Structures are given as C-alpha cells and as structure tokens.
Length: 515
Image 1 (cartoon, one colour):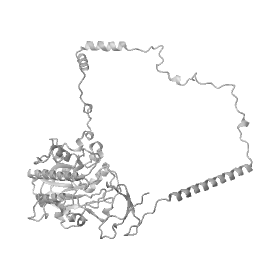
Image 2: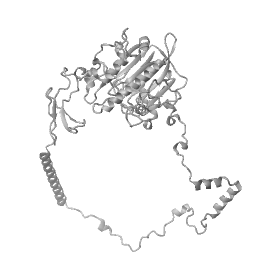
Image 3: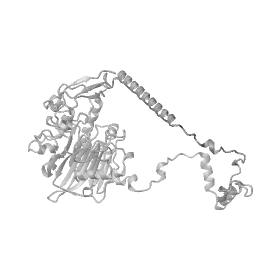
Image 4: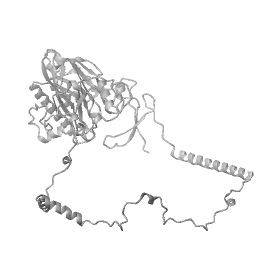
C-alpha cells in the first residue's frame, strides 16, 4: 500500500500544536519527525511552509529515514513555499521545482512540459517565482507486477483577493499552467496525482455558506475545476475531465467535510468552513488503485487539516535521491565551500598587471635577493636601549616608585571620637513615633492621589452585552482599507457558525465610541 498525505501547515517554523491533542512544540527535528510519524504516510506534501533557503535549518530539512525537497518563494521572505517528504522506501527517481521548466537543472528533472506558447517568459518566471509547485516522480508496482510511473504535483495555488483583481488573473493563469503540465505528463504515459491547497471550494457541498454567496457557480476557479474533473466521480459514463476528486469519489454526499476554517472567528469549533484541499488522481489511477480517501480534522496546528489517500500499489525506491534533495545542498551536505564562490572576478589595473608579470618572470635567485634586501632595510630595535622588550615576571611584584607613600606625620583620629554616644530611651521612642506619623501621612497622600486619578480617568468602560446571548462582547479593529480603517467595534464573542445554530455567533454589531 502507498499512503500519501497533503497538509497546508501554515508555517513550518512556527510553533505547532501537537498532532492529536498533544502539547505544542517547536518544529525542531524531533517535532517534525513526530509529525511525520503521526501522519503515517509514505509521502507527505506540505504547503505554505513560509521559509526561504537562507532561513531553512538542517533539523527541518534533514529527517532520519526521509528525503525532502523544497520549493522557495524568490520574491518575499516568509511567504508561500511547498515541501515534499518521502520515506526512503518511496525515494523518487526525479524531482523538479516549478511548473514551467525554467527552474529545471536538466539533471534529475521530471520533464514533459506541454505547449506553453500562450505564456511569455516573464509570465512563466512570475508564476514559478512564488514557490507554489514541486514535482516528484516515483516508480510504482501494481498487484499484477507491472511497473509504472507516478508523478505527484504538490501545489499551493494562489488566493484571489477580492480587493486585488490582478491576483485573480494570476490565479487563473497558474491554474492553466498546472493543467497543461499535468496533461503533458499524462500524455507521456505517467500517472498523475495533483494534491495540495487549490484555494477553491468546488461544489456547494464543499462550502458551508454557499447558499448566501453571490454567483457561487460563476466563480472562474470553480468553472476551471468543472473542466478538470469528472462530474460524477467513479461512475461509468460520467467522464468530462481527465482527473477525479478522490474524496468525492468515495464520499459523494458527505456534508461538513471541510479542510479550512477561520482562526480569527473560531469557526473550527462549530465546523463552519470550506474544503480547499484535494487529492486529485487521473481517472485510470483512481479507478484501479485508490482504496480510500480521507480527511484528518482532528490534527491541529494550522487553519487547515491534512487530507490523503491510500493506493493499492507498492513503491519502488530509487537507488539515489535526485539532485534537488535537500541533503545535497552545500550547507547540509557537509562539504566545505570554496572561497572562490564568494569572490567576483574583476578586471586588473594595467600597472598592476605589468608588475605582476615582472614578478612572475623573475628567477629564483632574483627572488631570494629581493627578500634579503627587504629584510635588511627593516629597522631593528636596539636591544640595550629598547624599552619594549619582554618584562620579567618579578617586575610585577615590586613596589612602584610612582605610588605615594603614607606620611608618617598623619594623625589618626582617637578612639573616643569614633564611638557613637548613647541615645536616651525617650529619644528613641520619639523617633519611632515621628517615623510612623510620616509614613501615615505619605500613605494618606498616596490614597488621595489615587482617588483623584480614578475620578479623572474612570478606567475602561465595561464591554457591552450582545443582543442574542446577553454576554460580554469582544472588541475588534477594522483592517480592511477604506474610510473605517483602524476603527474599533464590538461583536459577539462566540465562534462563527451557521445562522440556524443558537450556540454560534449572533449578528450583534456596535461601533466603539472614540476616546
């Protein structure tokens, strides 16, 4: 059996909650290895790693028993990024970063790019510059003993921000490039699995509030998925696209099967989310080898949950990892970098070049004479009059002549002047009473000042009660650009959920009064 899992981890370096109600832990080698063990998959594909190569550490990149592959964002740090971890028993025969082939090194790449004439070189470079795609190609063996090729495309598709129309165009072009590459691999005879965060809820059943969304079916991303996928899953005669949504193939009418929730509104508590993460397989592969497709909503640590599938095939590991493997990076391979890698070749000055040429043409005898001439011209300090010689150790223990000596005529105070005269008992009691009176006055003065400032400032106002539950509200701040940017408002403190659920957030809203 071959088990594959995909998870938008929302930052591989950030502190993650333990897998399955365990305590939080940092993404060190032990924590990362424990996460991979809990997911119990032969191949784990992660999205939104939010690391670049300069901040990637060895404990995250090198996990015992696995080989890993990373794709980084080249434009922004702490943004996007995908990674694939393969067990040594599922080592790929090839690995490649990006979809266009511009990042390929021609050594251990997957190949098969298809017709990309509709894209300019600048557009292809921009689509691959955010670290959103990583391909690994594996050899698999079916139960019949046939060896086949399987290509996994780990993707983190762009999000279309409603306030940025250019990002919607970028997202659709990324979808188009992904489809061209996947279909080219299919045409070359490889089976293909597209898995990751596609950032689109395909059907109304995949979104909790689809009924209230305007023009849900008219979304360009959903139309693209309609053409990519078969309509009715595994049923015969329903073929429209080359791929199948594996989860809907096994669970066609499962409601509430969501993979992403808003962490700000606490929507996960009431399962008020959407399904954005998929495992898509080509039709032949799903029909012949897929045994199960599942979600893991109990796994915490991100605003997404893992998804996966089980195939009735066995992996045939490659004898050697592809060159893209992180263990071959110079910073992790244990090889010493040459200083020439950090130097830039500059054109030499003509005078310097001529002098260097003269030096190179000198005979060994001339070179020895020049060295002797240089040594003879150096000034040597006099041994007799030199004061910079090495000091004797005993010189540090001799008294210094510059230190002033104590005068023998210095008069010391008499013992009687150093003694404190005795204080009478009445004086002691008077001092105690006076000290207590001063402390009481200071305390009264402090209380007066405190009461004055309390009457002047008044302190924070109590939170208003929401209209639906008569419970204290929470204060939020408007972050959306516009005339209300930065304003504070009150809303119900309960988690977001369906309007029909009385335990979910009510519709109470109140602007905060300006201070």
